[in-house]
Amino acid sequence: MEKRAHISGWTLPLLLILPQMAITVIFFYWPASQAIWQSFLREDAFGLASEFVGFENYVSLFEQPEYYRAMVTTAIFSSLVAFFSLACALLLATQADKNIRGGQAFKTFLIWPYAVAPAIAGVLWLFMFHPTLGTLSKPIKAIGIDWNPMLNANHAMTLLVLSATWKQISYNFLFFLAGLQAIPKSVIEAAAIDGAGPLRRFWTVIFPLLSPTTFFLLVVNIVYVFFDTFGIIDAVTGGGPAGQTTTLVYKVYADGRLGGDLGGSAAQSVILMIIVIALTAIQFRYVERKVQY
Amino acid sequence: MVENRPFAQFMAYLTLALGVVIVAFPVYLAVMASTFDTATIINGNMPLVPGDQAGENYTRTLLYGGMHARQPVGGMMLNSMIMALGIAIGKILISILSAFAVVYFKFPFRKTAFWIIFITLMLPVEVRIYPTYKIVADLGLLDTYTGLVMPLIASATGTLLFRQFFMTIPDELLEASKIDGAGAFRFFKDTLLPLSMTTIAALFVIQFIYGWNQYLWPLLITTKSSMQTIVIGIKMMITTTDALTEWNVAMTTAVLAMLPPVLVVIFMQRLFVKGLVETEK
Image: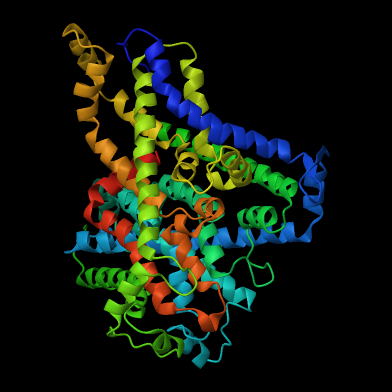
């Protein structure tokens, strides 16, 4: 895409683009390249000298059982959150898409959790399910489960999944609703005339037509769980109990700050960068195909 | 609706109502907790109707903070507000200018410049936190608003959004304003800026929420408690030993932390939806 008409001169445009360029180079390219460079270095215990160690940081990373555990944790966490938040949002969006009175009000009431900070969302859910004072812990304990997300890793993960899902439903809901409203009514009517009931229409007509939205949301949700849930984890479990809810991003933070292992932390950053770039690339390819379709 | 089924309608209401209740319940509990004293909450039998400590809790939290985050939450909110506004306004400023340059001028390395900016879309600040921290520290920007804001506006979303919008503006507008003898500045001020107002507002809403809710970055670069943002402050209140946590203060802070962005979403819903959908395209 190009404009036909242009304004002449090229000092002005360079001046106009300068602020963003400067900020991008100083706060994006410089640190990103530092991360790559640092991942090949090892600092001594006092951070005074560093030597080039090649891929040693990467090798030692893949020798750590903790790193694999963080990978597995991240995989479980993101698939659970993606699945539940997409499923709940789709259910709510299909209901809100029906011609019902007060649809707009429901929409408003469903989208505002988007505005709640992940860390705050975590605190809200922690309060609700706090082992000693949580309002909802009582009923759980009453049915004989020794609920304690501070000590039990499965409970901790459950709590994280709940809060992360709660926060993400609103976003998915909005996009699903927009996707549903873009499906031509005539297609659905045609299916109805052919005798397909509501469920059949959903699975054979609506759901396939919604697949670009679903795929887009899937990628967005995975990226969300990878990065934005840092606040939830830090507020609710702090990566514990015993490191069992430490995700890849949380480990970058914990190893660099608490452990002081900057080389290892940088190597993890680089691996994360590669994962995100891969995810984005997949998404762009798919979005391109969607446009042709 | 293809057919009229009262039962389906009823189920729709039921599902949506249930959804709203689930979505609202955690927040409802927080609001309730902000109206009781610590003892009532600690014993685990907090009533589900408001208590009478609301005035006390909010005044104390806003003006003095709790036992652990010994910092008035009012000040934290001010920090959050400055950071959120800085991010929103800063990003709009730099990205509308660069989009103007990329779309309306031909200059050497224009494509390269665009790609240099575009690539930043791919990497959130979380993956490069320590190197960024080091650079901000070297520049002497720890514990400053500049340090809080700058690294978070180094991203392409705004530039892409404005570029996309500028491409839809008919070329004739530029030609007409050229014939009228207007220079680049006049064209920008009198034609482009007024047309961009909705886009600016939508981007503002999204960036404000994004900025207000930042967690990891302020956590790293603020060491002075006077620079803490409210989202960080609340964490300080609950990580201490359980028995000492002042849950009423923590929950009051949570409510205060949610208020500004949630109000923005509710009252600027149209702009919010527009901003959300268009920045993701």
